[in-house]
Image (tube, rainbow over all chains, first blue to last red):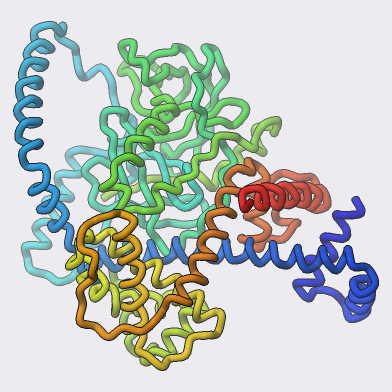
Length: 368
Length: 196
């Protein structure tokens, strides 16, 4: 206890927050007591380290951000093709051999697969995004018309709501369902605090996961996240809840894990019984402790309340493969410092408190 | 897009000479940093591309040089007796030579016609800071939650104890403070252990 007060005094002294009398008293103590004096010196040195650490971290993020923006707007040169050319020259032969093998294997496998699989009705599952194909087509056509009309003004940006996303790193990395953002050229994400520009870092259509990054100067990074991303499997019957954006207001729903596997025994997903609507794609599924155990992906047609969610474990797998992808690594060097929270700080809180703490970390994903 | 356009015209209009840019850098003025970046990045990139590097190497090296410059500016020891361009070029050249020898890529001599100035001393200081940064990062990461977030919110995010108590769900600021104290002690311990 004594130490807490002393340290507190040291910090206030160093920050110059003491009143003149208090300061005089403290300096007197410092002069007469070498232990205190040593503590002041040592602590100020440590705080200096801590400060420099924070500064360096801040400036690194800023520089990356600036680089990204300048490169995107073409204000600095980007000689991407050079890499491809060098790599091509280096690995030409390997590529040829690999391509041959891959070609033969692919043919063999696809032959086998088509011979062996029973005919599946593909329309049985339905993604929960809100994109309307017809509307998309119309918009695309409109924007091409405008562009070809030779106007310098860009087409008025219109974004439709695609789905929901949530932060996995306070620096601005979000996870959503791949089908929500697939093919989008511009993305915006919005939480109760504000609306930000974002881009796709990586798509994994197979796992139906997408990693997005907010690249907007008005975005203030969060320090840490309230929930953790679970690496373990959820239990059958476990009570679960979702917070997502099937409409412009955030919607809470409660349900339970109804099967350990998803559509047609897919072991990378769970089946959950919960209310979900178009727009819920990408919504995090949390358990009572506040661990994210899955991401809403799709629903089965004509089966009310049956939802398939991608297991959260897949996030780690997808990220691991991204981290080893050196090309990706280099375009976004903060990727290697991606810090995914494993532990939730929501344990033991009641639901209202949990929701209040989580709300800001969940975003509407809008796409053009 | 539109906003960007406006910002740009401001930067051209207000930030005119290098001294202003450096003052902006010290004050963390984004426009100043962006202007320096814009003016000098391409030069560094072409030097590195010409010497067995890739664009991404250029980015890493240039950003490190920007940090070296930043450290020098805030320590107050930057006198503009050479051009900013020369300084950045010299730092990048040194950094790249060092990286090349680490990577053991060929091409021991970095070609370039630019004028150079000695920057070894600055780089030594920078390396010391960089080592401290890595140690602190490791210490922070092995600290675990909620300690890490708590300390970051207080010391880096400069949030008040009252705000933190609210954010982390402590019942009052004193409890949060107590927890912060325990976390700080652990961080110090881990920091000094790693440093050894």
